[in-house]
Image 1 (cartoon, rainbow, N blue to C red):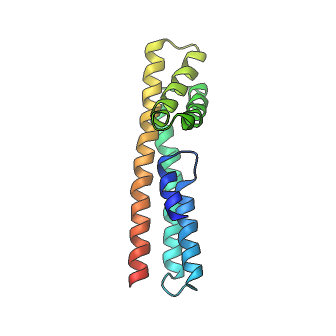
Image 2 (cartoon, helix red, strand yellow):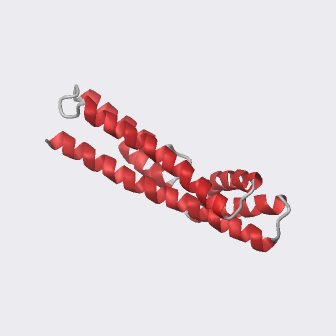
Length: 148
């Protein structure tokens, strides 16, 4: 479950860090909480919540900085899911293309639509990097707590 969650940190269709946390909770439960105690689980749970907030925040900030419309945000989400059918390039192109098409639908010019598409994509990419950092920190904390 942890490995699937780590893949989900990069693939937007999977709830990455919640799956990582669930896998760690399951491992702690299977071990009857001998190695992983409640304080470690609370910290891991808070880190999971931080990852969800960081992802939403990074995407919203990236879109807001370039003046994205709601249609661009909707297009970005739809483009992200459509991009999953064209892995690996679709993961990168989908959010950008969706935001670009959303801005064009909103009536913006190509130049502004491209700027919004790139800004929205950049926010998503930064969110993924933040989640990846949190994922490694969670795995590291879990391993240290297990070994100590």
